[in-house]
Length: 240
Image 1: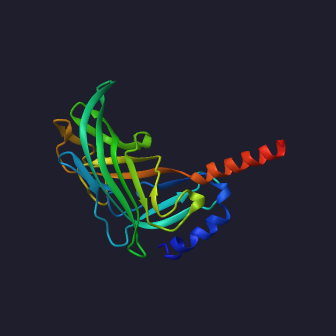
Image 2: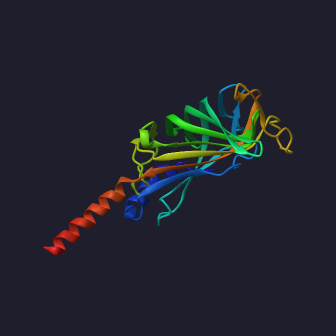
Image 3: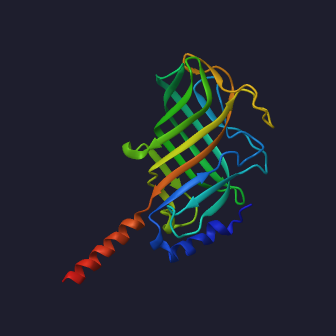
């Protein structure tokens, strides 16, 4: 379990190596919390995080855009609430259908060691796609958003990590995505593959469903732009 010192001390290491990073990648792997489902939804148009046991936390990773800084790992509680509105179906051939939805919602990460919330994201124009038949979701879906319309708002309340594009306060989150896997209406733990997928009524799930999920989010780092500006200034001086 992550000690509180990671949040408090990682910033000084990042300051020393800030020039190596231009952005940050947040991520967690599917089924890291291996005693509970990541999401629970329906029946209807909403889903949220499944309650997990006291020791069943999410390992949230932070990387500096595949740069030279070390990957940081935080032990966190993950909470999400998502509401979807049906937008339309796209036939894929062979009886398969892509069900498409617009989505609004929020998600948070809370440090296990301190019980302090470190990351809050609110979004307003995400896309949900779920592959299935005309009357079902299959076992996979995704939630994705790109901040081209400025509809993603993120607040970071952890340590200052400039090498990873993070300072306390509002952060420009470029994009995020959740992959939903092993969608089922069983909810059994351990899971034996029973009741895969979920039926639809009026294009929305008509029963309680469960899924695993993985996650990636991208933070554009302002430090990279500053470094480019300094490099350009130095080049101009050399030309003079």
